[in-house]
Length: 182
Image (spheres, rainbow, N blue to C red):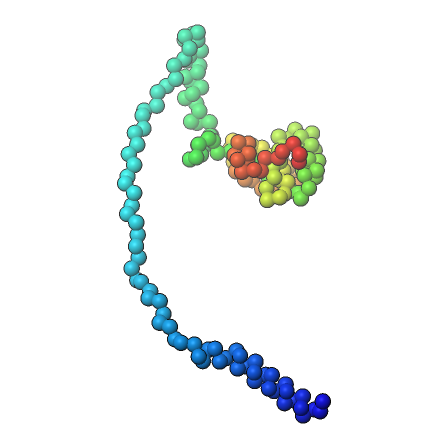
């Protein structure tokens, strides 16, 4: 083919393509837009719930205890509020744990776990977001956790993170408790 004929065919194809794209827009009827309501419908608030909370009753001690043992138990119970324990609003006691390291492979976590246990630390690990995370603890007070955290930095050179402790039953619910296959 000659050069001029190629240009004409190419131009005709471009014009046909543009016509196929834009002609439907020109021939389309304008539709009215859907009405928009300014009214916001909110449901009625639920009726208030009445609950009755009974006054707690002290547990009855078995008759086999003598008076001295009963007094000792009563004095121990009176010391609990001053022991530094803080109650968690969801129930239980607030506790702290130290996150030592996280690994992609659980064998590395187990290796660090055994090293920490040899050095008399209470260590455990959890599966969190596909990682094996090693913790030391739990500790009742945040100050006690910070002391152990400083000791880990000085003795082991481990930079750690003090976090809230997740009990085993919650870890089982969350699915972070390691299984026997790990």
